[in-house]
Image (cartoon, rainbow, N blue to C red):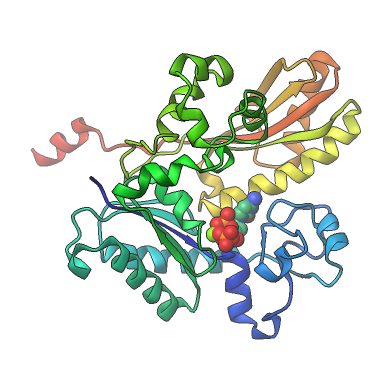
Length: 353
Ligand code: DCP
Ligand code: MG
């Protein structure tokens, strides 16, 4: 049985900015450009969340929900520095650290001897150290696998932790709403709910075949997750091949000009996502776009000569749109990443001669 900790910083970008400008403390803060109000927010502190303000919300809409919202421009270099500091702390406990973004990581502490091997105490100690060294709070989930640890870190957020012991897994998942399962978005949830599946306990009653018929290949993951089973390893060297952001619109869009305006918003979000994953522009191999039309048919356009620029994305979007000239329901923008060159064996043997 493994011991996995999932750590996630609390309202990360906002907390860094408030730490560095204490006059913001206690006031609603959103991270996003104050001048480009057509963009989207990266995140918001918990005071702002009371008004419904949250990450990925268009800045203009956030200001409507909370007119007193203070907008702070993101400083990614600062977030990177803090991210490195917390990763150094993680490494004091295990080499098996898998960062998911600047503010989030899985740790496999099964072999860790510190704190008498108690993952609960290790998580508490890590959170205390993070606070002492950075002045920022983190939340943690402790569980026998990644799936459960990630859900648990959200359970007592902010500045809290939650443990799911092996013997508690079946009770915990039984009443767990399906929406808490990673990968179950609005569409999948609606499909499952139409078959009266609301909790993991409900899903446990279905056969694998039945689940596959409802949600396709995701059915297999669902079958296992709903039983609290997840055998994915914490892998310290995960190579990412692409990063993308997709938006499904509330209503299908038929005007190309409107599609272009939406492209700007999605582009902003993609930029934030790359920053957050600490991906530099010179790591990008190519860009691509994806459109899903109202009949659910989709098309992708990529061009090796395009650059990571809004104008280039817009050109690809126009190209995709003109393929069908039909209303679209989803727009996605993404980048393919260069694969890191592995040192060739040939080179090594040459050097050792
Ligand atoms: N982020 C972003 N765009 C998003 C979501 C997040 O730029 N759509 C950035 C800003 C966040 C950081 O990533 O501060 C971490 O994301 P989280 O989802 O962990 O959100 P927070 O840390 O802000 O809040 P929470 O306390 O809910 O973890
Ligand atoms: Mg966070």
